Image (cartoon, rainbow, N blue to C red; front, side, top):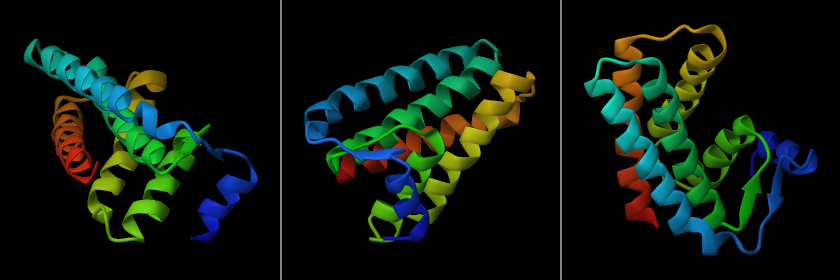
Length: 140
């Protein structure tokens, strides 16, 4: 377990969540709904909300994975840290997909808080969100 993950635990940004496994399917459904809504927006040449919804698809996918380990996040960043510690370090997920989640987090923040977004960013987030969801379903 890496130091950054231990820090998230110590600061209670990642906490034990014994009922997590019961919520895995709900999180996967949320991930799929967000991905579908993002695709709909992209088809209609909208880029801000598909970027945000694509990120949230990845967020819910990550939560499903975290819940399956009986943890819960209280920080988006610590959710990313947990994905690295629990899945990348244990060679269950590739580093690339977890880094795509982090990049989507940045693109979401830029779209949401700075109104900075692009077609290419939205397309990239949606592509990676679909890949992440498929991989997570295979794992779970």
